[in-house]
Length: 346
Image (cartoon, rainbow, N blue to C red; front, side, top):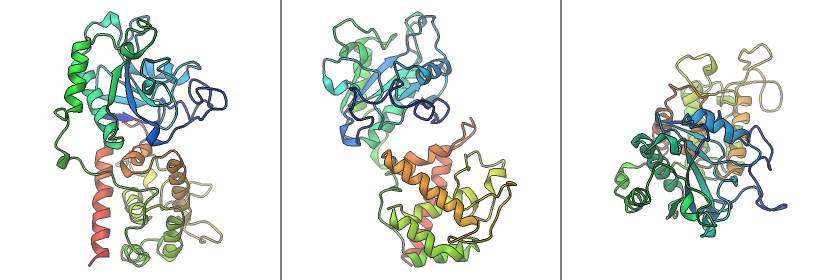
């Protein structure tokens, strides 16, 4: 499954009020995770019969009147994010059950239309994977419904098109009962990253940098303190640094093997000419510590949006490269975390 979390983002292009944000003037633009209680499924229903997700996602990104959280492809395994889940998307309108209205729901559009016929299985598979992923992060969500079933007055909406009531509810009930989910033991617990306690000591943090001959080592105490001050697990940050720049020793932006967006990377700072500058320190000059500082600042921003686990944050480093292996990236960081924590206890 290919997640694109950047190309069609509405909140990075348009201000609040451009199809998302407060439901009423002066109301909140975002909600807490506890306020998210449902998932509402739509199809895009293009009037010209389009089913290409890229066209539909671009429309939803740029429309001043509507938005959505995700668009699911009906032709390949692509899922794109238009709005992060904490934002209130304008997608539902008035609903019979108010838990499905904009302030409380996550909206998912399948790129499909009535003219195209029955909804293809690949679209249902993509939706299943996405809903499963959402429910891993919001396990209390048990309300999943179709837009046409909730929209009032009755008959106001016909979507999701190409999917009968009986087939949709059979799919939903199977998923909620767990038969569409892999065994719980096969699903890794999300790794806390932001808003998390320290899982290693400052001494272990320093020893790892020293042993790897990292240029960050002279400032290890300061870097650990920066993490601790804002409740970022320094162990996960250190493993993230390893995944991106081999503990600050490499300039990963030049690595063809690394498909991730490293402009805010850990452990690498560039001077005006684009080359590494390992001079200075936290109290002046440049140096690899500056890349770490940028990383901490970005993690704080993600935390403010209630993006707190490695699984939520790591995909934001993807450039949109179709060959980017997000799962492999996360697995590498998790493996390094395990090694560092093992060292803490030996």
